[in-house]
Image (tube, rainbow, N blue to C red; front, side, top):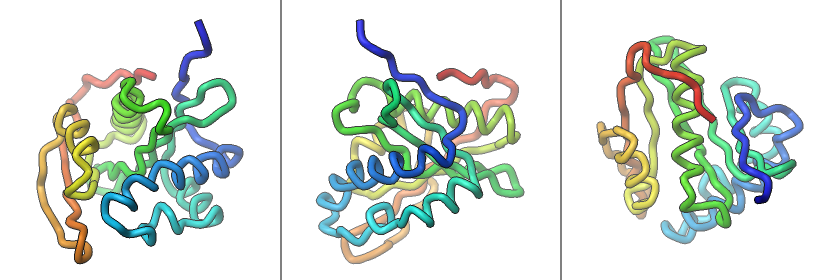
Length: 168
C-alpha cells in the first residue's frame, strides 16, 4: 500500500509556502460559494501567514513530503481555543482527514495549553464544514452578518476534562 498521511504536531517555517498554496487551492470553493474572491484566506500574504504561524499553533498533515492538510489555532487568556483555517487538499477530502486534523488540534490544545473550550467559525452555506463540526460535538453559539452574502456561524464545544489523548 502507499504512503499514509501523518499529522505533525507543529508546522514550521519550512511549511509556510506549502500551507499558503494549499490554503489558496482549498478556499477557491468557498470563494465560489459566496461569490467573493476577496476573502482573507485568498488574499493572505506569505509574510502574514508566517506571522500567524509564529503567534499560534499549527498542525500539518503530510503525505510523504507534501502538505495535504493543515489547521491553526490560538488559545486566549480565558482558555478558549480559536481554531481556524482547517484545510484539506481537494483530492484528500471525504476520507476523514479533516476530522483527524480537528481531533489532533483539540488534543494538542487541551493537553499542552489547557484549553477549556474550542471555538470555530464558518460560513452559513458551508454545509460540509457545518456537518463536520456538528458531528464532532460543536454547537452554534452565534450568527453574524459579515457581508451582503455571508453570515458567519460561530460554533463551540467544551473540552472534556482529562480525557484528551493526542491522536494523529
